[in-house]
Amino acid sequence: MAPDPWFSAYDSTCQIAQQIAEKIQQRNQYERNGENTTKLTVTIRALLQNLKEKIALLKDLLLRAVSTHQITQLEGDRRQNLLDDLVTRERLLLASFKNEGAEPDLIRSSLMTGGAKRGASNPWLLEEPEETRGLGFDEIRQQQQRIIQEQDAGLDALSSIISRQKQMGQEIGSELDEQNEIIDDLANLVENTDEKLRTETRRVTMVDRRSTSCAHPALEVHLGLSHHLNYIPGTSYSGHE
Image 1: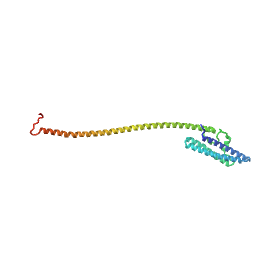
Image 2: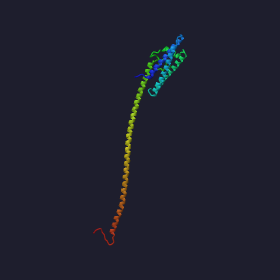
Image 3: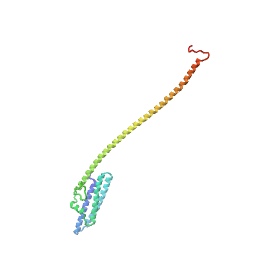
Image 4: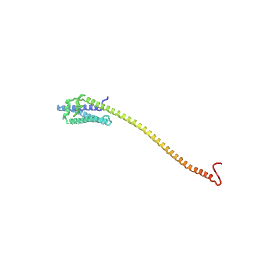
């Protein structure tokens, strides 16, 4: 896995801060011995400018990582704390440089316990968390990378679960659409059947009415004819010839 660019930049920035502290102490020693400090002063100014640029780069990388969700909010807060410590060290170093020989206890103690070699204890963390106390830059970076990997694995698992739930939701939605189509078809069938039933009912009613109206005149004609045959004057009709 490629190293995290933020921790690579953070590592180099801490080393620059350590170099500045050493150069300031060396300059102050030269001044006490009456030696020329011009070259050291120029070097310290250049290092301070480099430190400022490195811190600005760290801020930009952190903002980009948080805004694009490359790291979690918890990891972003942790890195912001480290960055705030670096900003504080920058102000202390600048004050020490301008005071011409005034060495804060922080700088003096860090020089006594550290050194600039890679992997030495980080002298720039005040109130360092218990989980990183006593760890070198490389060890802190590896620890942070392990944490990020674990968080990434958790996010991947969560993403997989969400994908499965999304797929299930889509399948349920498709099934509901099919059920709705079946219900619509049934509703149309019932409506058509109901309309046909009403039509047939009206037709039967009309036929029944016509049959009833036709039966009464026929009966009257038949009865009238019979009466006429039976009661013609001077005619005897017995029903047989």
